[in-house]
Image (cartoon, rainbow, N blue to C red):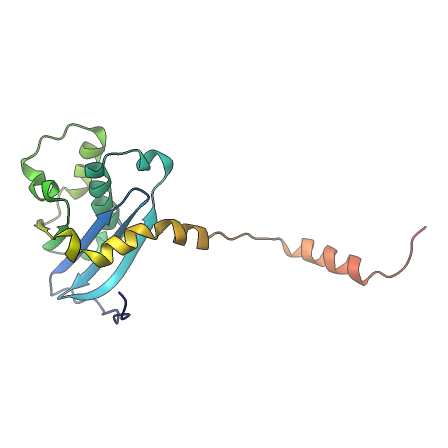
Length: 163
């Protein structure tokens, strides 16, 4: 990410890869094909999600990325790369929490394969997971009706003293 890679256009004949990571405050993901990034995703976690265990945060990162890029990954097989090794064996695990059950329903019907990616090799997704709160603050905006600005401007223009 330090060299600003060029975003590639998706080719639906090729396999997509979704790389994810989670930290205490956010999640990050990259959609790519053959090592070329197509899209980036970064999101701050809410207060309730910040209280989840790391397994559930990593699982949440995967689900959020899949939901974001469902239109890409629903067309054929794709790979999910995570630095959380236990998630690579998700299909063999008993789903015990409501989050796991709800999230797993979002994966039904998709042709995915998990691959483990060491944390030290997962730097781009890791960086995106740690800046989600910054992006959340940068996207705050407000709207103001035109008539309020007109009133403010007219009060500045009005130079008559009313007594």
